[in-house]
Length: 196
Image (cartoon, rainbow, N blue to C red; front, side, top):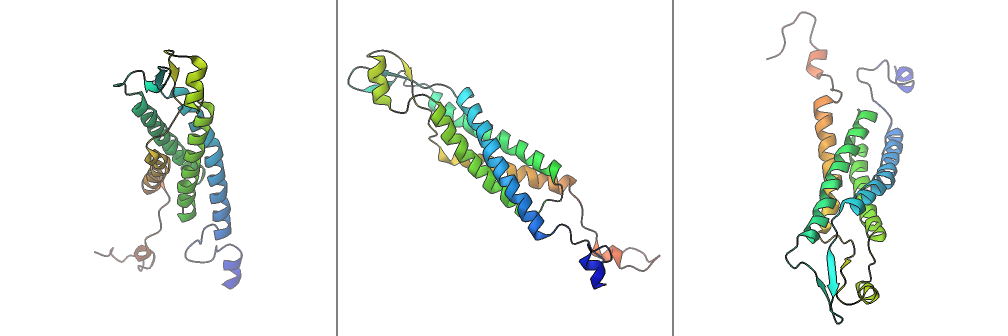
């Protein structure tokens, strides 16, 4: 019996599944791939789709051109919606690649999603308009409209990706993941009625 267990567990009552080392390696790969590829994708989409916030200078100060405009809130909202979509997509891909799930995979989805969201935020800011507003206002001149830097005011939006990723993955695992065998059915004598 010990030999069968050492060779892969085929002679035991329950399959031990992949080893912890294999699960940790898979989780590390998921974390890195999500953080890098997903973060770059989200950052590019946010930079491309976020609304521009128009500013104007009167020579002494810089003001919002439209004081009642909703572009600033739209920047945060765009990031949040895109992060939710990328989180759900990443969870679906991870589930399709590795249906067995496991705690290390859920942790990888959380950590990778958070790192990817931070990378996307910083990439969007870097690609966006000039961050030195005073220098930009001086450069364009008085009364000329220019775009404000891409800024994420609601830092809680960084949690949208990991939250969506974990929830979607857990839902997919609950609905379509492998089922553990019922221990009561395995040990019933042949022909005995099922337990109430």
